[in-house]
Structures are given as C-alpha cells and as structure tokens.
Length: 138
View (cartoon, rainbow, N blue to C red):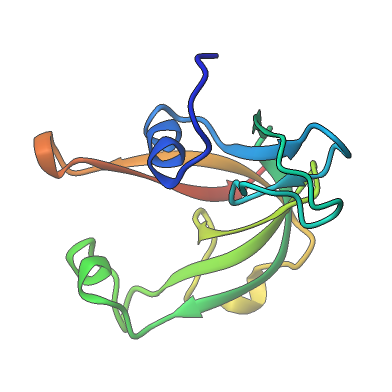
C-alpha cells in the first residue's frame, strides 16, 4: 500500500477505494478507528495505517424516522426509516455507520450482537459521486 499521511482526506480516499482503514500504534499495537495521530493508550506518536477486516458485531443501534435532507433525497423518511448503529470491529475499535439489510420499521427484529460486515455504497454520479461506509448482517 502506498504511504499516505494519517489524515481525514486520506481516510475518505480509502473509503472511496472500498477500504476500511484505522491507525495502529507501532509502540503498543493499539488499533483506532477513526484513525488518530497519537495513541491514547501509551501516548506514542509513531502511528501507521492499519487496514481493518470490516467484520464485527452490532453493539447498539437506533432507527431514524425524522431524516436530514440528504437522506430524504435518498428516499428515507417517516414511512421509510433507516438504521444507524455502533459496530465493534473484530480488531477492537468501534465504528458508527448506517446499518443496512435490516427492517428499520420493525426495530425488534434487529439484534444486538448480530455479526455484521462492512459494505461500501456509491451514491451519485460524476462530481456528485460519493462512497459511504455501511454494515450489513453477515
């Protein structure tokens, strides 16, 4: 993998490439997501990119019925809610992302602890295109 500085810009580029990246402390091995410039465990500053498997389990979630404008443009709203949640990755860090492939109209059907896998969804075309991270049941 090419050497990129740990930054928000580099992180977004990795997401566009379909890679879930975090940072790892070279001193103590602690892995972080989102990537950090220093280690909160040992206070080391020798950090490197770490590609994450994108597998984990759903730790908590919420179903959203009152949506922001950009989600309304994607068809979500009171009659079509979406789910977002916290996923604990197998490497340890927690990630906040949209949870897809679940019935947000029936939150009782969504189970804490269920295994999930990262997916990268491309929305829009040309200059308006963007890729976002989501998780689906594994």
